[in-house]
Length: 144
Image (tube, rainbow, N blue to C red; front, side):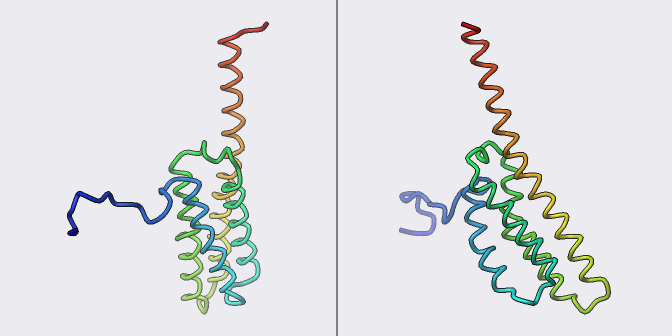
């Protein structure tokens, strides 16, 4: 079969982007990468990176996370696969520059806030879905 053959459907190599599974798949190498950093990153930065990972794990472990919008899930996936690693790599390249550590902490704090907000939205989405279901049942069946 050639490159342009239509006989065999193309199969994605991983989970569909914008899904909880994709966030989980990005989390595995993220955790491994964090462990490999050792003492190259200041302690406060490492704490923030781990806290970000904890938020991502909360989303992955929450059944209601499937209710999150695709953009939020893509952002979380990219947080693990690109945003945090890119931030750390930029710091490592510039760590001799005055104020580099403070910039790193500010940037990681921003990312942590986004991850925490997404984890909170996951819980709120579940509550909203439950309220909507309750309103539907009330409308459909009324008080007995």
